[in-house]
Length: 193
Image 1 (spheres, rainbow, N blue to C red):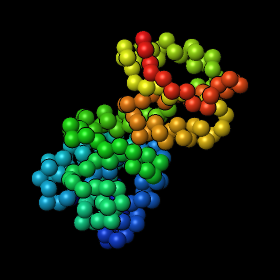
Image 2: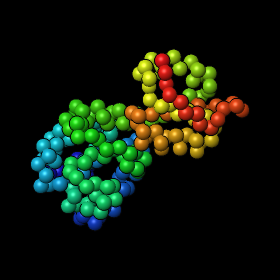
Image 3: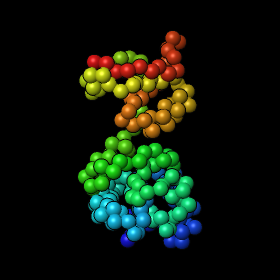
């Protein structure tokens, strides 16, 4: 089995040390396939994962890591079964792809979705006000919870982004760079049409 991404070394202790640097060096995200060489489900996934990697080439890197080559990485990232497909962003484990995502087309679709910004950003409150009708159309009748952060403090955006990465598909996160005196730092509600 060949890796989709070449790591500088092949000794397991080196890969255990190299993998976190690879993952953290890709702020827009990467998908890692943790697998076992003796796993029939892993062997079935291999051609699909490689096809997805070819389709995503130049946009999002994918990597395959064997449990034999990186046993400490398996423990570090909480991998206990195979195959496990984990999405990493800014060096952190964010999402695990569900077992239903095992074809090249589904993997590509998932990666394209996960690599989009996790937070919808607006420069001003008036920009947000203009976008509300479009947001309502995009959300279901009773949509997911909506978290809105206000302020020029970069820490507000970073906190929202961190939470948004982990709640993709479950909660909508919005950041407005402009804050009025009466605006809270965070406002939480539910989208209704």
